Amino acid sequence: MASPWSKFVKEKSSRAEDRFLGERFHDRLLLIRALTRNAKLNEEIEFPELNANGSQVGFDTIGDTILDFTIIDHFSQGSKKLEKIRCSPEQLNDLREFYGNNLILHKFAKNSLKLQDYLIWGSDEKARKVWNDQRTDLLADCFEALLGAIYLDKGIKGVMKFMEKTRFFQTIDRMSRR
Image (cartoon, rainbow, N blue to C red; front, side):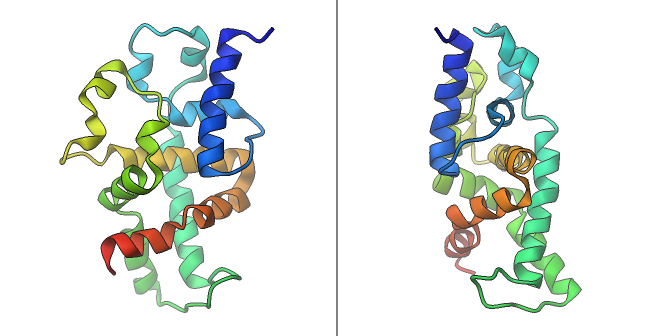
């Protein structure tokens, strides 16, 4: 019989995998870590394994770097499915700054991905629905942590597949009316 921790990992990760990837992580604990807010680990928790697994801290840094890479790759070489777009270094940097903007990422994560529904929040964060605060962009870091976990588990091809599945560039263009 599976332990309560194993059931928790399977349930939490399955929902997120189905929503974001359409396939399973090789190491689901990477996904659980990416979904776990540090605030959750600062309170009494049901599973000591969650505390041992850690929070998304650090994964967001990896994800930020991977996001920059995918943006630059998308616009400098183009995807095989998209018409190639040639940009100057200055234009590439502008595009990287635009698509990597924390407010835009927060909006994408909140409205398009509904990432807030998959995160493991601290009880105070969840009660206050901090993701709805007009002054916050915290879902940007959560999105980047998710990218970090996908990269660590599936490599750059997995990240590219995720970006295509979520229609990242098209959705942000539509949201921004760029």
